[in-house]
Each structure stands twice: as C-alpha cells, then as structure tokens.
Image (cartoon, rainbow, N blue to C red; front, side):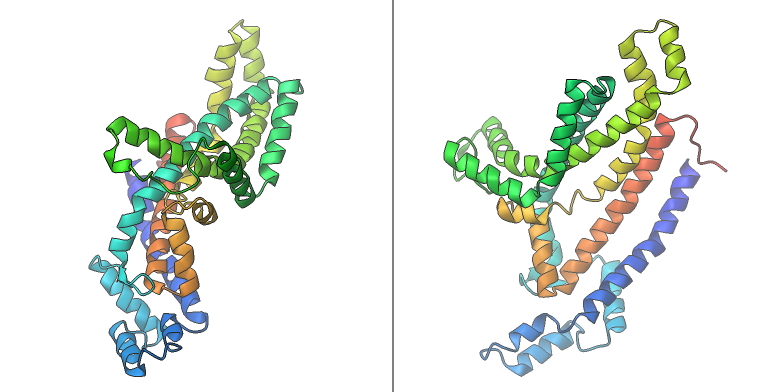
Length: 322
C-alpha cells in the first residue's frame, strides 16, 4: 500500500502541472486582462498601468508569464490579487475556514441523512415509505438550489426563527463559547440545507439501487436461510458491499470542500471562497484563479487517493500490490 501511495503522489505532480498550464492558457486566451478596465479610468495614467503590467510580467507572452508564476509558487508565493488589492495568501486565509465549515457541514449532513434513507427505502421496497422517499428525491433533484435558498430566506423572514444571512450575529464576540457555537449553527442552517437537498436526493437513490442489487445476491439468501437476524443481514453483510461505490463518490466530494457553492454563498451572504472565486474569474484576477484551481486539483487527487485506500480497507478483495 505504501508503494502504491507513493506512486500515486508521483503521478499527481505532472497532473497538477498540466491542470495549471491548461487553466493559465484558458485565462490568457480570453480577451483582455484586469488592467484593461483601469484604462477606462481617466484618473489612472497609462504610465502607471504600464508599470504594473511590467511589475507582474503581464507584458510578456503567456507562457513566460506562466513560468514566472510557477517559479513564485515553488517559493510558496501565491501572487497578488489585483481585484482585492491584497496578497492572494492573505485573501484566501481569511475565507478558507468559512468555506471549510460550510462544506464540511453540508457533507456530514448529506451522508448522515442520505445513507439511512437509502437503506430504509431498499428494505421497504414498493411500500409507502419507498414511494414517499422516491417522490421526495425527485422533488429535491428538480428544485434549483438558488430558488430553494430564496424560498427559505423568505420563510425565515416571516417567521423570524433564523438569521437571514452572514456567518455571525452582531454581538458574537460577547457570547460565551456555547453561545458562539449555537450562533454559528443557526447561521449554518439555511446554506447547509440548500447545498444538501440535491445531494441527499441523488445519494439516497444511489444507495437504494446498490442495496437492492446486493439484496438479490445468493449469499444474502443463504444468510437468511441460516436464520440470521434481519438487522445483521442488512447492516453487516449487505451494507458492506453496497457502500463500496459510494466510497468513490465520497472521494470526489472531498474536492468540493474548499470550492463551496458560489451561488448559495452569494444569496445567503456567506463570506466564503466560492463567491470570491466567481468574482476572480469575472475580473480576470489570474493569480487568484490559479490558486483556487491548484487547491481544487490537490483536493481532487487526494480525495481519489483516499477513496482507493478506503476501498481497500472496506473490501478485502481489493488489493493494489503488484
């Protein structure tokens, strides 16, 4: 396993290089750059703009610009955000924890709800429980997240039971540690629910299908014929094999931990990375875009590696040794 992990890490290096090169190329192929908008401002002289373009090597060919960025990256310098006028590392560190909290909360909520519902629907196949859960999953998949966020914000504005946006209340610093946790959970409720509804619907359907397929296998019939309790047949024998495809999905979802949901963050006024990255792409803030791409790529590769390791741990039939 150690040899396999080392091999995957070595393979990840050229993959990250190719991803960053492609991202930089696509950013450069779109017309203009960030300083083109400054040229419309009569208060900024052309000499000032030219000096900044030379300072950040934007007057060079795009491939040369890329290697300047790569050289700075090897020195752990992420560059400077033109739009926010601060270093990229400082900008991301200020919002990284906020997005991580929201993404982790939605991930835990999704999996803790979807898996039991999928198992319940499979065990109660074609009964009223299964039909209700199927209808709910279809509704959850069909509702756009931004529309659901608007509906929930309107509802809580009428009831006054939850905050309408943001991450903290005005008197957050004066609260006790328990009060701070409860205040954060109240602010997390709406964006977490909005992000999780569609994921719960999809994951519940996948879990139901996997369980139904496993429950038809001969070894399940044998276990029942031997007189094993039904809960042991379901949770010890069937679930262990039905969950394998979901472990791969779990690895892919890890890559979205820092990406967040930009539209949900904007509507719910959550100060995270998602809305900031969307603004960076629109403003052609190239160094901020490259850093976000790099973080997403690393998390995607680590998520896939973690999924493979978990698969080998959960299923003794899977081995990566040569």
